[in-house]
Image (cartoon, rainbow, N blue to C red; front, side, top):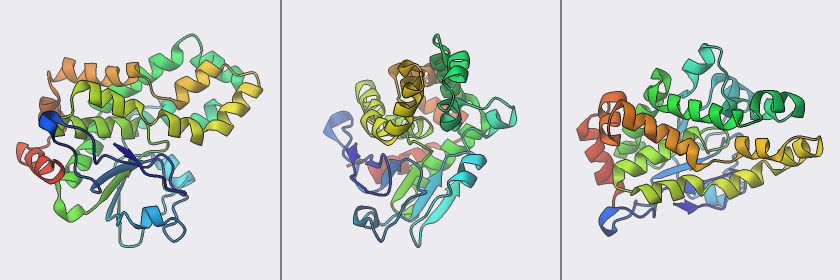
Length: 264
């Protein structure tokens, strides 16, 4: 996966170039991932303009979209797949959707996230990426669109481009033939960009007496987070292919089209 040095989009990465089984790689320029697009400015950002994006998939909640609406390139479609809708509707607001609130008060953060609670919370959220109906609908959309040649270059994102987006990238790359070591390495590769993007928030939190381990648990991604989702796939379905077929309802024909389009 290649980091793309955009100036108005954080954590922008091309899935292209990721190594796959048999010496193959992911075709570049067709499926990209990033953080939210609220500051996107193609006129001031030639790197983004050169991508020729035709489809954008926003995985954020309604509240996140309202607070920081995407700025979509001219001519691109905007599709919404709210991964966390079921959890939001149940009143269980996940940490992935409230980073700013949680890091604004060190006392509250310690109460709700200290002593390993943050890690446990993220594990629960990642398992819901696999099991909840809203997440399944969102990732079904992602795979269906990524397999469609008419979708053109596609970018999918959440807020920071690390959790909801990270699981989407893991599913795509797994189907294309990336091995477990590559999947984990690509998942973790966003950490430097994410920490840079949220550096002022982390510094403010710790300066106010907040536990830096809590901040890092919220801001970064860790192997245990991804393993929680992978374990959920194994427990419920036995394999990624069965999860995609039975859990997401994506046909074998769509998976083959995805591979034909993206593997080189």
